[in-house]
Length: 322
Image (cartoon, rainbow, N blue to C red; front, side):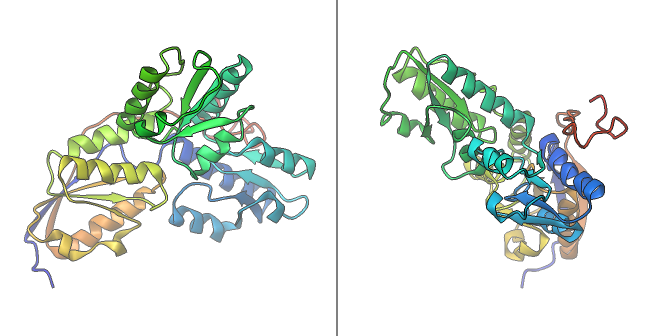
């Protein structure tokens, strides 16, 4: 049993938590339920957070792994991570009414890859194997995609024409990690073309920068997010790289009191798919160990809002004209 901490300072990273793509995806499911009534069917988790998924499930969303699991005629929503073209074709062939919640920044990467392929370039995708966004991107670019995860992978690439190459990136990778791999690609294939680090989404960059600053001021870093969330995992890794003990937790129930031994300042952030209510619950949990003083660091102000799909936006909602 840990001794009570008399005074515990809590510093909150800013920005943290939901990004515009996640907010849009959640609103798409909620609006679809309002318009069509439950159930609506969502292929894969709408975003990588069990609390969000359970909340939407309680409202009438049904989460399935494949389009084949959706009953005939049921409203079908694709997750924020995007889907391969064959998934969309299967849904269209069945005549399912589809609402696409793919993040617009992910859709942008799809279009970039498709444009490269149309110009006769082989496409290399920098990303994590098995991640839904990566699977969706691989399935959107004709002619196949080479997947690399690290600079070391670049050395083993087998390509048809080193002078006709391009690359795109998973949006939620670390800027530093991507830059190293891009440099490795450019060193081996000087003629390769791509967007530098511009495909890393604004929310990923902002949250990582905020954590770097936060870690200079704290004894312990707590990242609220899901184990299968790429951007949340990266936030925890940054803490470790800087030398601050860092833990990725789903919610306050996972807090181990032993982590607070000798700690006077705790830093908290949240992945892009983690709701703010989980951060507030964690603050309350920390308050059980003594007097807490909470301070939010100043950071980049995010005011990006993505439009809802046309079939859900009647021109009167909060996203009208965004």
